Image (cartoon, rainbow, N blue to C red):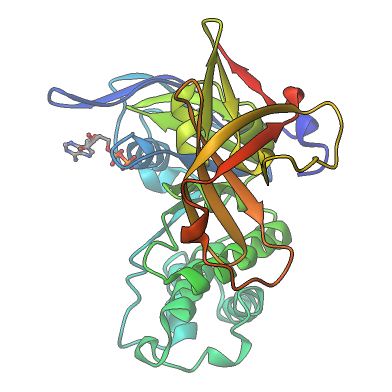
Amino acid sequence: MPDGDVEPVIVRLEGVRKAYKETVAVEHVDLEVRRGEFYTLLGPSGSGKTTTLRLIAGFEKPDRGVIELSGADVTGKPPYERDINTVFQDYALFPHMTVAENIAYGLHAKGVPKHECTVRVEEALRMVRLENFGERQPAQLSGGQRQRVGLARAIVNRPKVLLLDEPLGALDLKLRQEMQSELKRIQEEVKITFLYVTHDQEEALTMSDRIAIFNQGRIVQIGSPTEVYEEPADEFVAGFVGTSNILKRDGRRFVLRPEKVRVAPLGQLFDEAGLHTEEGIVIEAVYVGTFTRYAVGLADGTRIVAIRQNFDRTTACFREEQGSRVQVAWRPDNLFELR
Ligand code: ADP
């Protein structure tokens, strides 16, 4: 988001707690989402993301804390008094209505005049690239297209904030990746603030302006994709967002990302000076197509995972590399110390 710092705060949570009987779902949740941001709540299953979204939507009431929308306290307000829409994974389209009727439904309910409805539905269909699908029935659409209709149905209301709870969870990998770029494009076009829930770290990294990382009902870090990846707040974040090597040196702990580790046969020189180099033995070499992943055991017992991009075509059998002696190297400034 350009000029992010000057945009006003649209959603604000302070000291929010919610328990279901003895299960504390979220606690001490503080966050501020700015206008136009693509803001993601990322964490493993059961870490409190959906509860946070439901509290913001007004489906749940916090036991403690304050929820503000555009500076106004809405903590005690019902969902319909909040300028918010939600897109769920299960799009729940009305099967007996056309796509256009599904999208127009909320507008009719609000008493928007008919001609304005038509214009806004067409605009929403164009946004999600389904211009010629208005007269179809939901059953005649693919999963990805149904997902777009679900999105169109929400953006047609032009809410201040759109809440999205794992909206791509039901799609297969390829379609999910396509929809990630689409969602980002749509968000930039409609300029609606998106609050997005996912447990998928790649999804969070590729789409978000900022990410709040949840662990056991608490936010453990808030930052841009590069901040949470390159400078994780703790070992949990380092392990949950991407893969990490944790190196222990003189009682200190450092994160070293696998793609920052070079691997080479013994004796071969690295193409860069000033690298920290160690010898080790290949425990495992896995060919993944675009890259090969190595696990290398160092003399002190540390296991280092390294990723080497396959710049050249190969038919090598990587099993043969297992047990061979290699050297691993990294730039010392690529170590990030954990607090
Ligand atoms: P996430 O969205 O990160 O998977 P949730 O917010 O759904 O996590 O859940 C957080 C915790 O609260 C979990 O331990 C979950 O079992 C519990 N929880 C969520 N909703 C309810 C509910 N309606 N009743 C009882 N426990 C719930």
